[in-house]
Image (cartoon, rainbow over all chains, first blue to last red; front, side):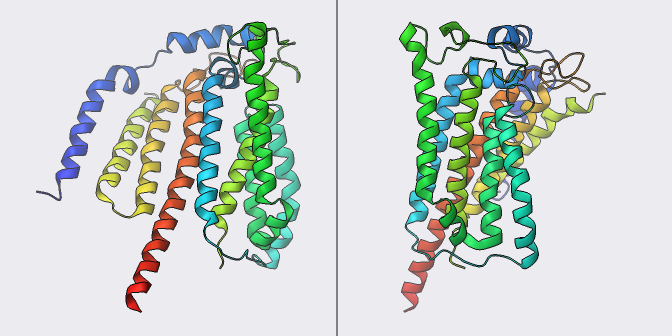
Length: 233
Length: 110
């Protein structure tokens, strides 16, 4: 009886969820009024083509600001937890094949990540995606040459400063609309030029926010990954 | 029948599987992994619900015809990033607990 109790509990919850969400989530197909508004007026109101970016960095930019605060908190927590392990940085890394291949892959990854961040308002992509791709560079460097090499190349202190820089730019842009009396993180409504939709310099604050998030996420995740991979093997 | 319309059901199943795992596992790493499975279920359901087959990505000027709703995608993007941060935090906590237990174990042996 006790062993099957969790299964019964989950089955009951499943039934409850099917009844509660049935019409809206499970079998519904219509698009909600808010999403429909974004589809219809997104380009005119934000000046960007990628409507996911428009939601993320304009309509719901406050969520994104707080999300970056969560990333900061996670990076700080992981770093301080792993800081206590006084393990030496590993040298050497993997085989010759890996060490030959990875330096040739890195330029591609760098260009790809910057492209994702820079054109996030026009094509699929954005600061978060670009930042995560860039942080993978750290993992590849550690895999090829060991944590010691990665540490000397970009030290954790540099990463935390870069993250602070990204976060600082986010906060400054968030507060800037208050000067003209608009709400926090207002974009076009606060007088930022939206430009010609479809061009690189369009969307007011959106490309700048995207680049700031790019730097911040790349630094934070590379710090997290370095902390997790730092094993005195 | 549209394959995408099955998506929310798959998501619900994944969510419940993850929750079941959370209830029945005691090891930290497994708890973190089950949390990830449950979270993937929610992500799966939301993305599948954003539109139906044949609709394009919510990027204007990219494809003709109707587009999927951009809002679930934006929500899911946030959820993925927060989920990755939480997984990292959970794993480092698991590592810390593991080392504490190992140190306590070796202390008793001596």
